[in-house]
Length: 99
Image (cartoon, rainbow, N blue to C red; front, side, top):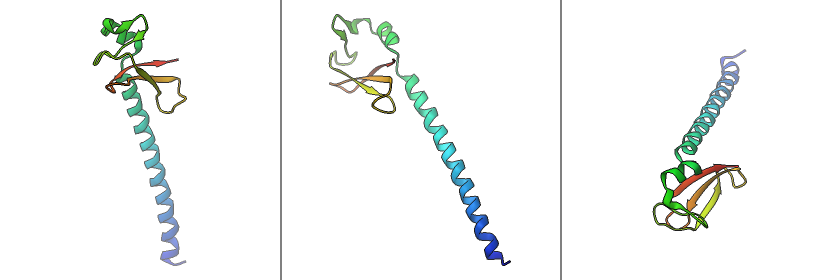
């Protein structure tokens, strides 16, 4: 058995192992950063306590520009029950909910 026929499978196996480690570490980083991002946005209850003037009879309004036009986006994917509410006028992330 030649050295080359021994090294090629070894290099392939090492490549698979390093690739798997990279994918696992990247996935863990993405999950951790998403969790940190989610927790950095105030919940709707926290938003109401911090900004009592933003609670109106018609719903919530933006703390920055006072707009009542607020969009709801799924966190991670459009159908997510975890929602982020963003002002349509100025783009400020206002609060989060998880239904």
